[in-house]
Length: 227
Image (tube, rainbow, N blue to C red):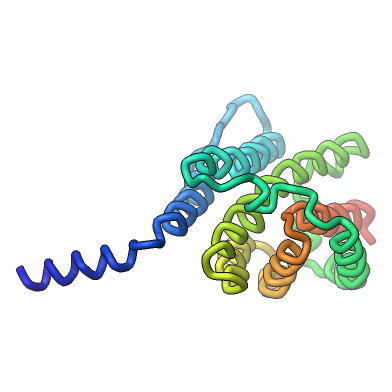
């Protein structure tokens, strides 16, 4: 009985004052995992369109599920980075980082494993209309992903643990890249931290959406053009 009493005391002490972080962790993790195992399948759709539908669905879930939890947590949208933040600051950050990334993207696009993985949707090879449609699908997904990662999770934790939240949001970002080319997966370590810093500097996750999408769209374009 003493053991169980001590165990109960320890659990109560752990959760005391950390309920908000617990809820944010459960909502973010549950959404990431749940959308991986549960998605809509429409038999008449080909595999290319099915994967696009799944990606759009996951992106919308990444956005909507955390948004639903915010009123219960009594957290305003602005405090999870859902604002324009400081555009004068983050526009320069995004432009500089994109210029730095461009030669790396050119190098990556010439590697065999990247050629097999990109464009993300093979339908992007069917013509420019399909290419633009594929980019729209990616943009929807990345908006949701950046919100749940660099908005909800990062700013939600930063309210309590400060800059240590950078490490919290980096972990799921890296795990989401497992299965992609090895160079990209290792690069996501640096990219996750960098995007987190950009978000905190900007007080918004929107610059991360812009930069992440620009990098992905450029890689798709290079792949389609066989650069």
